[in-house]
Amino acid sequence: MKFAVIGGDRRALWLCRLLSQDGHRVYSYALERLELPETVPKAGCLEVCVYGADAVLLPVPAERGGLLNAPYAVLPCSMEELIGTLWPGQTVFGGAFSEPSRQAMVHAGLSPVDLLKRESFQMQNAAITAEGALALLLQERERTLLHSRAVVCGWGRIGKLLALRLRSLGAAVTVAARQGVHRAEAEALGLAALPYSELAAVLADCDVLVNTVPARVLDAPLLCCLREGTLLLELASAPGGFDRLAAEQQGLRVLAAPGLPGRSAPEEAALAIRGAVYQVMEEREDG
Image (tube, rainbow, N blue to C red):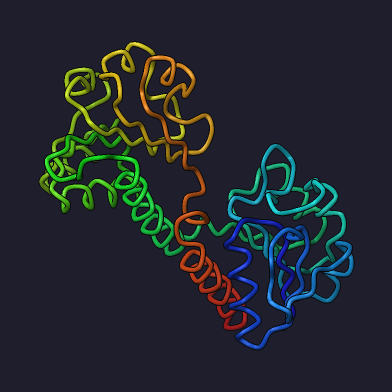
């Protein structure tokens, strides 16, 4: 089979290696500044890269502001240009497609597959993100997580896994969640839990705060409750859970780490992408 790997971070490098090792023909585009395997040509144009490809693999997330997410590309590439180059009938894998891009793909006769809508892939991605977050916290702190006081905002896949891992390392963990059922689940697992309206009561004693919610759950008054030097880790995509500049001006330490799987464990993240792609293709063959 022929795969076209277009754009992305170091996950794309490992994806090229893995697919090539599996015996597939792999072409790349918008990865010019990465050192790829000799078996993976760097196509000089999109047309050469995607011609005859059984599947087109875009990044997770696929785009930023209408442009292909391609930090290792020499030149920017718009999603409109990319979609216009693909061939009707091609399957396009990626993550977090915008609705205009998804509609444009369908209109062009393409078959988009958003990996972030597949539960199994999301769980793998969440596990990688949680582990990467722990590594960042350990690296940036001069004390252990043991006996630290941590607040995790959000009880989604990442928030849940991270809170449990923090507790396993000896941290006292409080989960902030909107839904009562989520707070009840956290408490049933041995964690403290409260709604955002009560968060101010625990922030003054907080050593580490991790946000996993892609919405402003920490306003200026809540940020003012935190002690100077408190470490804030942002894992959510824009707009994030708090105003980063306001937090820094208040003397808080801020780490922004969206797309953490591509930074902390790109090989493992690429394995998850490859597995999801193969699974979708098998499902379609069986169907």
